[in-house]
Length: 163
Length: 287
Image (tube, rainbow over all chains, first blue to last red):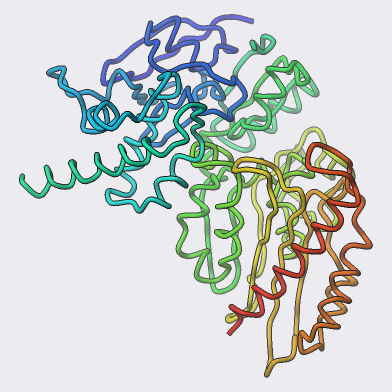
């Protein structure tokens, strides 16, 4: 079982590595690329803490082998803030509206919400709840997460209108 | 949880993939989205030496709709099926069903082909394919063959697919325009398999049922086509007695396992509730 050559774009940067084919994308990101934002929660595809963006779609990186992502573009929570280091509207809104308690689900939650707002820039509360149904939070009861995403959507839409 | 070691392959055509299967035999497993297989590999219940990833094979990706004839490539994801306006225009039950499978991330990766080919009685598409009387296209070393969905499922995880074959497409004829439809699924939470679910399609002609079909999910070792329940509906005016006869006929063919979703009797009961709700919802949206 030889190692395979993998090449992908992670947060806008080309990366190359040798990896065992059985390496899961989450392990590649955390251990090889030292991107420890995406978390390993349930390790069974249920909780969504490992959510990353791949080719413009939200996916669970604990359910993806590194070979399946070969040649693709991946964005993690580390790639969500603006290049100058200022926070994205979602990150601001999660902080401002207390959209987290322990914070374990937050990277996956924000990465998913980031894609959701591109799929649907003005979601209703029901659409937000359905859109983040692959991300579990055991602390908040979701109330403030939904509120933070709603506020972030308004902020982004206002920014867009101002431009 | 770390899966066992394997070699990874990405063939570019169906014939290349079939050739790999022929060469590697039962040491190889096909992976499409992988969301059923990878958990099994993590538990080491699946230990392939070779993983054949079919994501690059363009022939098994698209959706084509020509009149009422629909063909869905095996690698089409649930999200792509949901997004297809062409499919929705002729057969809206597909979107309704796909939206009740798993969660957004999993629908982005999980494929329709994997859902029907895996043979897991918990999967939702197989019962729908019973109701649609769909045909599965299997490619193997000696060419391609068609198998009816109603002949495909033999037991849990055992299907008519031979070891050297790959499911490449799903074909069916959409029911007549104006048909009523509903997929009713009882589940404990988003992402769960059904406690029981029912797919119902029917056509009304002046208030009388001229054609119908009913499929059942996760209430036996295989998806079920509820033939006697269909017979109870066709020719009726969907009066309470006919609906009750259909529900009773559907319940009588169930043989669910007891699991965390409830004891056998409960799941059979829920199957009846789902059938009744789906019949009433289909009657309400039929033109």
